[in-house]
Length: 227
Ligand SMILES: C[S@@+](CC[C@H](N)C(=O)[O-])C[C@H]1O[C@@H](n2cnc3c(N)ncnc32)[C@H](O)[C@@H]1O
Image (cartoon, rainbow, N blue to C red; front, side, top):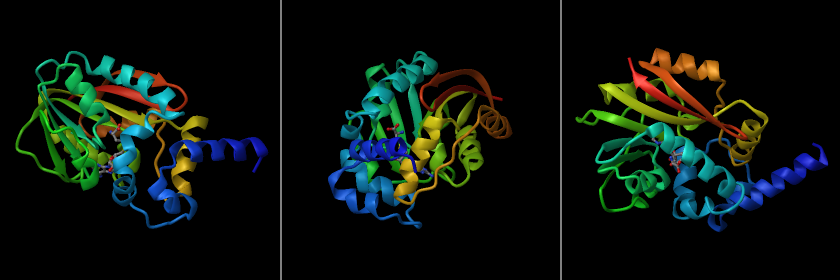
């Protein structure tokens, strides 16, 4: 490994590390699941967004997500893979009436805001909710799920016929490879997507692409419409 790559990796380590999961960070584990990993960092997840590089990436991603989400005033939104509620809070601040927020990690769901939010612990690919939604959001989840097509089909099942969805996912770029390397170091294998793979995935699961925004160094944000 070159010195500059080694330096970059150690810089990422310093930025993303939280004290109580330093053992996980240093000892690669092959059987770590997203649920275990994210539960371990749930308490610090929001504050991690304040440190570089997330402090640089997150606000730019957020602007793209909110732009593509459009007017959410008064809407009841379904959020899949909500984490500790970074976007849940943004949606409520943008006027959303209520957010039903789903995550596979119970610790993440516990960190959600209490008001105007229904938190559900569940797998986005399997969960069944009786309601249908005009607006669905999923940011940074698809790369962790074993079957992204099942998660997207299940999202379509929960959308109205005119339903819209915004999806944020990592692209197969050099920045995406660094992001994958970061997760590989603590034993998680994440998926990176090309635009064509994403298009095929969406179309096969009942969605068409209305708009795309790219946020350097590795983020693609899609506005989808139900078909
Ligand atoms: C990178 S975090 C993003 C969290 C949040 N969307 C955000 O932008 O801050 C990915 C989240 O997806 C959740 N997740 C992973 N696999 C999932 C699944 N199959 N179903 C639901 N949530 C899942 C993780 O627990 C984690 O909270």
